[in-house]
Amino acid sequence: MEYEYFPDYNYTDDNVTIYDAPVFTPQTTCWNKVWCVSLMVVSVVIFLMGFFGNALVILISGFKMRKTVNTTWYLSLAISDFVFCAFLPFSIAYTAMDDWIFGRFMCKFCSTIMFLNMFSSIFLLVIISADRCVSVMFPVWAQNQRTVKKASVVVALAWFFAIALSAPSVIFREVRNHLGRTTCFNHYELHPHSQRIVAVSRFVAGFVVPFFIIMLCYSVIMSKLRTNRMTKSKRPFKVMTALVVAFFICWLPYHVFVLLELNHSHYDHSILVAGLQVGTAMAAANSFLNPVLYVFIGNDFKQTFKNSVLSKMENAMGEDGRTTSRYLSRSISIDGRASTHI
Image 1 (cartoon, rainbow, N blue to C red):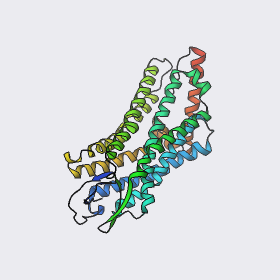
Image 2: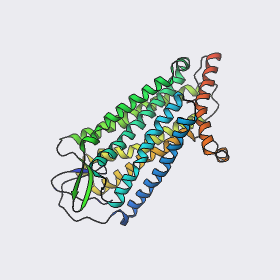
Image 3: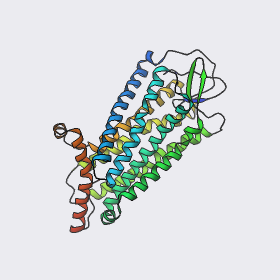
Image 4: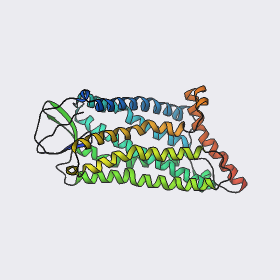
């Protein structure tokens, strides 16, 4: 998408802040730029894979499996990613047409959904990490205290904080008509320092703190598993490494360019535009990577190919609870060691 400069105000168009400069006529649209078309194609792929992938996880964990703490995590994470992917077509259409035709409400709502997904997904990843860490460190307590009701309360709290942190989109997102096109943007001009506050708070609450907690939890788990003689499979290490790496790769570029944008005068505008678009696409990619990482990582490819997708997903997720219980029981009966399952 091409971005125009507008006089007398600054705003963010698709997360890119455009600052005061002389007005000039619209440039070529997205269809004339190879990189823009490529990003749009990537967004379509993310939509298709994320929408149907998370729909399968919702179907399996919500309707075909016994409700457990683990399926509660899976279901909540899948719902968050599914809702986000369901609204991706609005962004894709905006990019293709270079014109926002969906009105002021949808401008605010679609942006809110994006950040709701960002915070809820990250908070759920933190919860899953902490839950597995507790199960490894305190297996007896975890076996007695981990209940579906408590898990549902924790999930509800995560969604509550995610909604609260998504509120800036409702406040600052606006639409404006100029030179024959309608733009959906973040209007920060009337609120001094608001852009910096929003950007920094999203970076701290949506990346730094969650990443630190996840790294801490997995460091504790890996340290415990290395000293556990019952650990024979490398699958837990593969899953943990994949989760941390995917989290870091998907979200870091977006936050970096958002922070660079705060000092826009020191950087080339076209680099900020391209960087934020790529960063946003990479962040969105996490929505279809989550079901892959949590369900398929570590499973044998040939066996996966032979089995149906639905049965394989059900077996993979069901194995989570069965393996945890088996390891916890062995830990209690043998020497009180921690569970080897993550």
